[in-house]
Length: 264
Image (cartoon, rainbow, N blue to C red; front, side):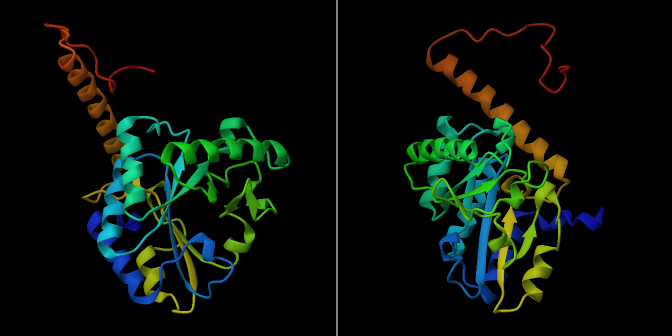
């Protein structure tokens, strides 16, 4: 499975990639798009793991760089309104991260022809996220923009007061690298940075769930996220009963099935 470069996706290698990029490029924000002549915009879509996101943000803080973190309000893997998740997102912001909105049009069954409806939903989520995390949101990315709906074809550079990072004005100007689905979709990141010209503009998209302490397959990385969430949920349940002096009733003989064994 060497063609998938499992060993690339570790915290150690993430730090290495940050350092390589620092040697050649300045780190920029999406607010610099219209004026920048070179540099790198590093972006994270937090699809699954805020825990992994916080780990990477700590590395960025230690290395003196920053990235833009796109938060998904409709993830099946985390909930912005959980205290633990909320606190971690606030810590990412405190580490220097810029918060953006990761918007899933499929949740609303939106289509690109209904700009008014799309804008209404974007405003709703923008204002909600701004209030929860107490920060201004001025940039958004579509979740799975190339799987239907024609959202890559939108002509608006800004919608609902936010910059659309998938607009052609960005896609056509920037070299692009993505780790979507846990492997390099276009070029390997290390090759892109090493071969890139110093006068180039590049955009790097990473998904925190895929960057672990050790190399493993993408599915194993996702399962690790799911297992961790399940374990934390049960820990919170046990601690809540203990705190409130409630009896934690368990099956004494035949244990109940784990979530992995249940048939859905």
